[in-house]
Length: 306
Length: 295
Picture 1 (cartoon, rainbow over the protein chains, first blue to last red):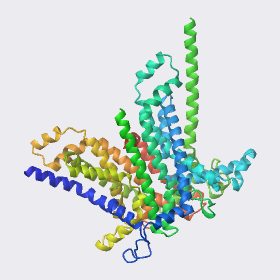
Picture 2 (picture 1 turned 135 degrees about the horizontal axis):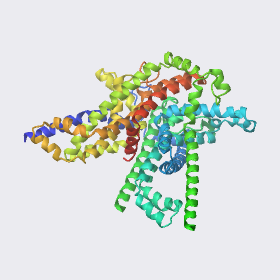
Picture 3 (picture 1 turned 60 degrees about the vertical axis):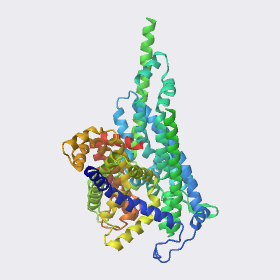
Picture 4 (picture 1 turned 120 degrees about the horizontal axis):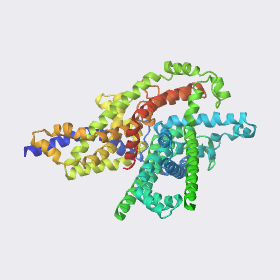
């Protein structure tokens, strides 16, 4: 009896700090946020007196706003391209550094390093490369003179600027995803390769019939990881393009490379429409929640298959 | 005879293949590190040199020391105080997250009840919640708390550490939970028979066993907190005495548009602590980040 009471006391005592922090930082703001998205919440009005319930106005208004619709589209495009490039590059790098290369350990570290530096700083470095270093090549080599034409700057057109975001995103994450692939590839039993070699399988056949199927477990992890990380990209977006250059969409001037996370931030703080920014954050959350549910479903299904 | 010559032929082919692979990988490796090299060489240039020849080697390598000294003492970037704040915030938040979430995970594993299952489930489910949906209300909620209790949370160390603990515990509890499940119960039962108090059992017996998972959790949260930009931007705000390194770099880059000699040196100084730390704890970092990906 005494022991039971001690158990229960310890249970709540050990949990109390995390429950408190969790309640204060996540749970309460989360429900406040969902609630505010249906109101005319603003930073200038006192939260308690002028707050009015306005139904779905913030949501319908968001979807009618060309900037949001465009941002949503660009984010989907960026996410898909990023997923493809990151996974392709990461897998190729993993194959290279798991072969018998002499300096493979140094290569691994080098490919991984960009991931350690914050996206904000990476974005500034690449802004310098795109705006200064690359155009300077045009001054040095006559053949590359077009690089030095202001209209040809990579970050000055939104199609190339989006590709620049993808390039930096790939450079940032490929090394990390590579490490996950390495773990998967190194888990493939050596006997399998030995047996296949004796049967006369070429390296390419072994890659297609052994390495890739055996690493399939990792594909689910890396696919969802890159999907979610790309969808949430903010730091590189801020420092590399700040959402620019401007462009025209549905006859309204908008930012051409503004990903959703940046659009949410700008709606609240630049356009000063806190409630609408919050509604967009709710939409953002719903998309991520759906992705997470799909991930759980896929993992469950795979477990059953095993 | 014939067989033999074929073998050496094959062997030569494999050797050539290996050499080509080595060269290709080395080139990709250099390309990957090239942006950092650009930062390094341009940190040793004057403002004029950078705009004129961003890809050339610096005229005088000695400039790098002058530029570093410039940033180190600059009143605008406040590098030293930012480094101090970043270290302090990361260290306290990591310490709190590791202690609090490991003890919480332990009681959640060892007390098999509906309540503990429900609590664990909520923590895991909350990992889906992105910062974006809580960030705006968090600011006004922190303001409300300060109004009601007098405890300042916005623009303070306390507030940002609390925020990091709140955001960091879900994944951490999840990681500890998975590990503790695999520790045999007999160990704790023996300790109880020996008269160990419950909390002693945790801190003296379980806690030391958790070392590898503590390392993983430290790495995962450490890299995230150290590099984070949006949360400090909102909680600490701009123009605050307390600012983290990413905040300092962004404020500085915003204020000194196109002054790349200063910005790139600031970036170099911002990267050095991470690179140095990585060289020391490489093994743990790679292991930890791979472990954390498989949630």
